[in-house]
Image 1 (cartoon, rainbow, N blue to C red):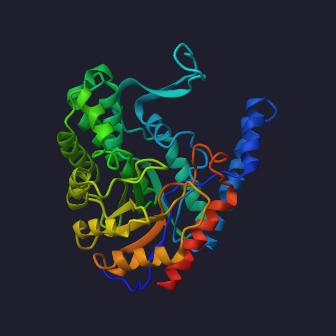
Image 2 (cartoon, rainbow, N blue to C red; image 1 turned 90 degrees about the vertical axis):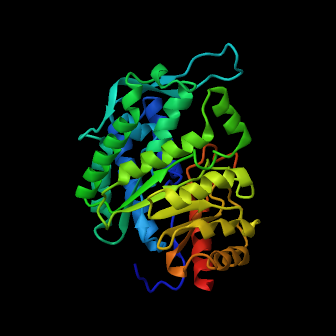
Image 3 (cartoon, rainbow, N blue to C red; image 1 turned 135 degrees about the vertical axis):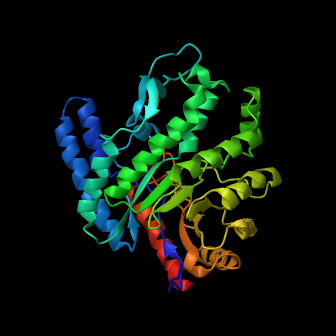
Length: 370
């Protein structure tokens, strides 16, 4: 793999905050003041403008901002055969507030769905970009689905899944065929999002696993095997990216020796082409973990906080890039936010529609300085 890239490329995690006009339209639909068709037209217009602005901002790989998604994970899983979700909005016996939660339900074994709604959305994206940029399809990782079932059953897969002995095969086959269809449609960039890898060494999460009789080391074995099976035999021009952001506010504990054991194995053994790795820019020494990244793999460094509007120091970003360059050639370095921009509570965190573009502009400025 060769490149003439002399500065880091700027990339995004995937999601964007919707503009206020779309949020207002969705609220109006809930009140019966707008039809779903009217809201769909507004969504289409918002995504059209989003693509144009991403390209204008210099992004070479774009997404639809996950504008239509309600949940970053369940929306994709619900599109597979054998899966659906149930909205729970009752149960105030032990809570002060009304509970609203999506529960996974299974109507059969997990399987590929040739009518998965994400296919149509991707084709729409291809039409919008018209060769002006490449399109990245984001989806929850196969390991994320496995862990959701494992933890949901408190270590007993049979509590959630009718055929626990075939679960890994079913997940791998469903994802494999889905990826093959995306490739047939022209997709050359697949990003797996996962909250698990950024939490495996966290003491609280490990305690949760142990209470269910789940060994974190064995889980690591399963996650590596499952992801590698999912992408095995893929075409050479299909790039697989693994995004390990734990959530919108949590950075992996890079300084913790136990957590690094899991992350090191991920970097060394997972058959991905690029890794999106969020770092705390105030602890630039944590970038030393890049020494485990195999030659030829791309490192996408999350260096600015996508969940907050405050702007990081451009000098700190540049210093972090130079530090990373000790371990990774510049042509394999990209920089990005630490997380997607679509945060859970934008008002409390002080975010608005322009905040996300300010962060992208900051990354572009840092890249130019390098």
